[in-house]
Amino acid sequence: MNSNLCLKIFSAEQTRQADQYTITHEPIASIDLMERASTCFVQAFLRDYSKDQSVKVFCGTGNNGGDGLAIARLLLDADYHVEVYLLGDVEKGTPDFQSNLKKLKGLLAPVWVSDMVVFPTIENGDLVIDALFGSGVSRPVEGIYAECIEAINRSMAKDVIAVDIASGLGCETRYGKGAVMEVSHTITFQSPKLTQLLPENDVHTGRLDVINIGLSEEFIRSVAVQQYFLTEAFIKSLLIPRKKYAHKGDAGRSLIVAGSFGKMGAAVLAAQACLRSGVGLLTMQVPECGVDILQSTTPEAMVRADKNSKVNEKFDDLEGFDAIGVGPGIGTEDETAKRLKLLIGSSKVPMVLDADALNILSQHPTWLEYLPKGSVLTPHPGEFTRLVGEWDDDAHKLALQMELAQRLDAIVLLKGAHSTVATPDGRLFFNSTGNPGMATGGSGDVLTGMVTAFLAQGYDSLSATLVACFVHGRAGDLFLAEGAEESLIASDLITKTPLVLKCLKSR
Image (cartoon, rainbow, N blue to C red; front, top):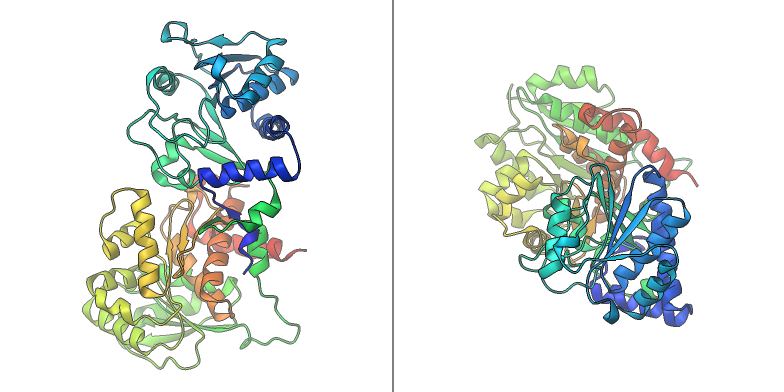
C-alpha cells in the first residue's frame, strides 16, 4: 500500500516546513511561491464566480494577507471589480506582504480598517475573500480582527471564500472562543487541514477544494504523518485485476447474515451491492419470511432460510467463506444476539459488522474482544456512541475511534461526511467522495455489501474498506450529475457502482 499516493494531512509546522523546503530546494523565491499559490487560487475562483459580482478582499499583514493582495491584483487583471481592505499594522507586514502591497498600489488604493467606523458595507450578492489569517494562527482572534470577522459573518455576502483556511480556524484545532470566519467555500493549498474535515467546522469550511501549488514532492514523500485524505490515484493502486482464467470461486465467497420481518430491504440492498462489487459467490442467510423476497429480487444470490419465520437465530456452517457480513436489518432480539455471539466465536475469516450487529455488541461489549483479526466495524455516529460513549468534540471522537481500532485489532469505519477509517497501527484515512444526498436509509447497508465483497476477493481488510468507502461515495457523486441530492436513494448507489469501477480500472 503506497500511502504517498494519498494527500498527507499536515500540521501547521509541517506546512511551514514544506514551504521552506520548496523555497530552498526548487529553488524558488518565497514571493514567487506566493505568486504561484495565488495564481492557482484565482484559476479555481474563475471556474465558480462570474465577473458581475463585486469582490471584497480582506487581508491581514502576514503571508496569508500577502496571498490576498496577489489574488486581488490577479482578479483585477481578469476584469473583476475588486476592493481591498487591510487590517493590522501595515508597516510590520511580512516582506512578501509588503512586496505585493507595492504591486497592488499601482492598480488601486487599499483601505485600511483601523476601526469599525470605516468597515465597508457588504451588499447582498457581494463576494468576500478571506485572507486575514492563514494556517499559522495559534491563538484566539480578538480585537479589531474579531470585530471584522463577526461583521462579515453577519453580512449579506453571497459567498465568503477562504484563502487556504478560514481566519481563526487553526490547522489542528480551534483556539478557545476567539472569532472564526464563517465561509461557504475554502480553496486550500496542497492538502486539506485536519480541522477542515471535522463536522463541527462545516460552517468554517463550506465546500472544500484542494489545489496543488507545487510544493516539493520530495519533501512530501519524506514526511511521516498518521492522517491521510483519499485520492483516486491511491484507490486505483489498491485494485486487484481479475485474471483471464478466473472462475467464480476465485472472485471470492461471501456470507451475509441480514434481514428480519419488515426489514428485508436491508438484506436486498446489501446483497445487490455485494454482487455489483464483484464477489464471485454470495450466500444470504435470512429468516424464512425473506426467502421469496431474495430469490425474486436478487436471483444471483444463494439463500439459506432460517427456521424462524421472522428473525435470524439459526447457526450454520461457516466453512468455505472468505468473508462474512452481518447486521443489516437483523434486529436485536435475544435469539439473534446469541447467534451473533456464535458467529463471532466460530468465524475464521474477517467479519464486517454493521447496524444491528453493532447495537447488539454495544449491549455485550465483552464479545468485541473475540472478533476475528482484521474484522471491519462500520458504525454511523449513533451506533458509535453506543459502542464507546459520548465524546467532547470531534477531535475526541477521532481519538475514541483510533483507540477502538487499536484495542480490537480491527478496522473502524465511522460513517458520515468525510467518513474516517481508523487502523490498529494508528493511521486515519478521510474519504474524499460522497455528498449529503447519501444521508438516506439503506446507504449503510449498501456499504456493508461492498466491504464484504472486496474482502472476499482477496483485498486485505484496510484496502477493502478504503476501496468500498471511496466507491460508495463516488457512486453518490455520479448520481448528482443527473439528479438532485434530495432524490438520491440507496439503490441508486448500486446502480452507479459499475460505472465507478469501470472508471477506476481505466488506464
